Image (cartoon, rainbow, N blue to C red; front, top):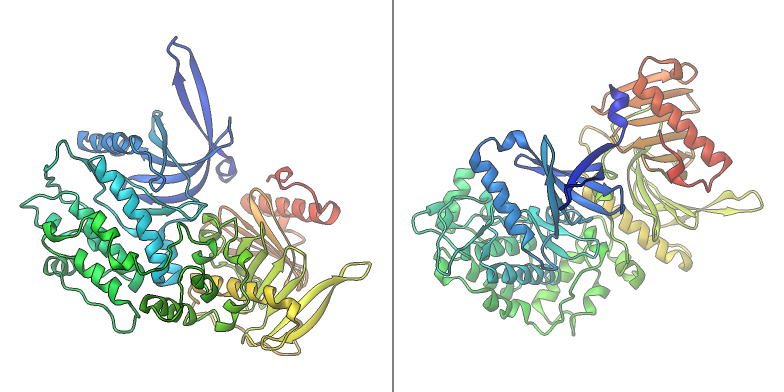
Length: 567
């Protein structure tokens, strides 16, 4: 049964031609992207064109009521009619005996929800950039008599080019005529407009304007203005328009003025999209970038980046607010941004969704007192692989095969270079405050990887990092490789660790001669290496054999293509 689960799932679309001929189009169902309502979203790959899309899968069992079926058809009808650079592209839809499949544009950089969770809050320059894209999409929607009715950070997707794409039209409606009012109570508690809650007078385009104001507040402050632990209390605060600006967050007067003007209980007194775009907040003499660099997925823009857009840094209240946010990022010292080059800021490849979601998860395994890779991020298309170990230290395996490991207190680091005919790692130790100038860029990257990894995942309060002894041998990743189904690390402490895409893990220890297997539920079992392949645990033995193939490939033919390795 477990083995059958490992086979790729093929979804078939039956196409009936005009002449009655039937053809089959196949898709490989890939990784899980998210869920909402009755639908679950997966990555689909066309077996014919190899094109990647996001597939929203709605079980037909959830559509037994005619209202649910009509709601889905309305969503499809509205979404397929929309074509705008800041709206998730609609490919097409089809069905089989069990499900309805809606194929959509794949946005590789998750949603604004994940971005804000990592970043806590955004600078005003970033907020200006994102809001202008949302306003552009809203102007298009309202111009086509469509009200979204569920604008929120979770429905703002980020493309590989860092463009905002508004998605999820499950609550959208299209007006039949100008002046029509809708009366359905719908939306997400934190973002819902007071006239929707009231329901008596009906609502129109102004509900999207209200939500835009909530979004602006949330991006700048870090949490929604009316948020409480109780939904009824949140609704009461929305009806009363009871919110305030926290004193500990530096905000410009223009940003507070814009939010105050939008969050007005009477929908007729809210500004139009044109008036919002003409507001002082968007017109302070600075240029606003059309898109932001992918590095801002993890870290605030540096002072040098901000200077490109704002003349006379420090004179504008909004800019000084930006700089304060940049400089107070806890995991990123002030000095790290100064050496930042344009090639890091303007990187052409963003951190992809699976890298910020799956690859940064905490490992569920332990191997006695051994040290292993706990979380990681793959940025090897440009720089390398960043990781943290279970003892709390941070390292980077750069694309030129040099390696850096920062000790647990974050004071010293070791730099490894391959030298000599046998290409052995040669180590030098430096202080983070005193190192050769040629290492400046690598130290900057180390700090960014460290900030990204520490900022995205909270430290387990039950797990204390091991104390570092200056005389201990530094543990670091000596080699790593990615295959279609897993990522493998070979550590200097003779640990081989393979993390599979289905969240199972194999950890081999040459020192203890043991193998640890972590199943999909996070349950851990340890076996003697000598007898592990004879185990009755078929899932574990299958992955162990695959691990042996990877090791054999690395030792005998390091340049073997990843696609040749399949479990």
